[in-house]
Image (cartoon, rainbow, N blue to C red; front, side, top):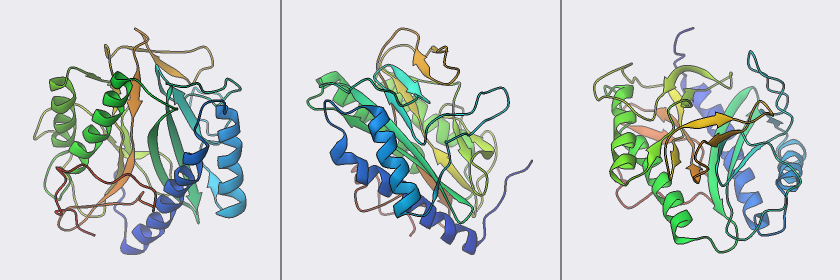
Length: 271
């Protein structure tokens, strides 16, 4: 299956889905504090997506080949969990970090985004990891424009992360998105400049680097979904959905509560 190029109408619909996904994170933000469980966060998100937004939580019962159906409406990955953490009844405690990953389907189109949260007072190391991972995502986003190659995005992220002394998870990547949750192309968060597919206007995909404080090796837990760092080091991830425009890019997963881009991101982003 090739890369689908989205029309202006498609992109307008995805802009709505992306904003709704980001607004779920806005809604959850004040609830992420010591004592709440990720199960409770999942219930809040599910109710908001279904009852307030009139949308569908894409992860619920999502079942790629070889997997059991995912049992919850959001993914919550805590501390050394890299991705696909399943919400549970363990209360979050002061100093935890948690990635909340939200994908909604609205009128048949997907919006996919995630943010890091520090629960209560985080350590300096935790704050630095979350901040640097956010910058790493934007290092990739800022590369996006027609004519560059996907390898340029991955290279920009990898060099920034590794120069800071962290590691990039290689087994999971960003992905094309539209009327399907996961489409071509794969967006690697490492790579060589000038390699892989060339970007053209109308391509829509996620950029979602997973950065480990320690080594990059990972393993899957027995639930068949949760991915953790092998060395139990902290891991962080941020995610936006991006469309390639005629002159650059537009971030589709923005809302009133979205953190602002880092200072190095110029006004070169086309709206």
